[in-house]
Image 1 (cartoon, rainbow, N blue to C red):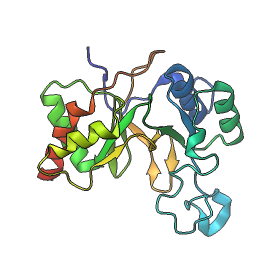
Image 2 (cartoon, rainbow, N blue to C red):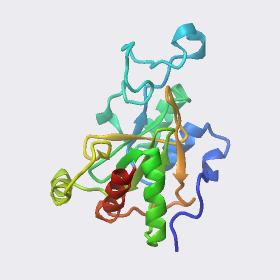
Image 3 (spheres, rainbow, N blue to C red):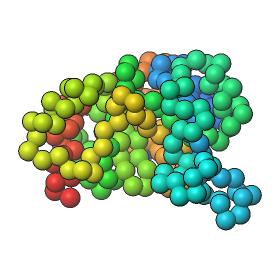
Image 4 (cartoon, rainbow, N blue to C red):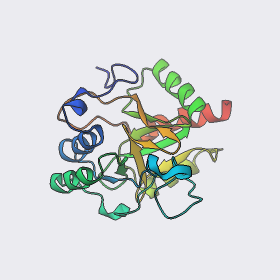
Length: 217
């Protein structure tokens, strides 16, 4: 049975009367045991010219609203009380997954190449896990991998395009339904509703298709 039944399908359990970000954060942390923390978010609409700019002190932030700030990444947790406290105080904060360790990792690439890669993997009958999308990039969630294993895998490739990014130990990834200065974050392939954590493929199973799609694009 395919893990993903359709594209851009939102989890209904994330709309059960709670703010969407809080519901999403609780699902990840409590039900799936994925460590999360709130992102910095963007400046409030009442800030005039700063609307859409990052809420952090850097006026030239390269990823406005799309990164941890306070608390820092090391504070990511699966503790329900902490998650509720964070998003009760900041209900619109982006949801950030701390990748690596026991948590999922991810591989991301530009959106055009990502769409081609998904089509190629579908043609092969490959079972995929959740896929996160923004206007610019697709990120495929994969099972945890170590930097050593990733290095061995990439060393065997003739060419690895620089636009392919890896979110492993010490990294992070924004999850839906977050909004940043660059726009909204959505599910291109959504997890199935349920209490068990979504199934994740090994990085070896998808990286060839991702590299090939980037080279072709």
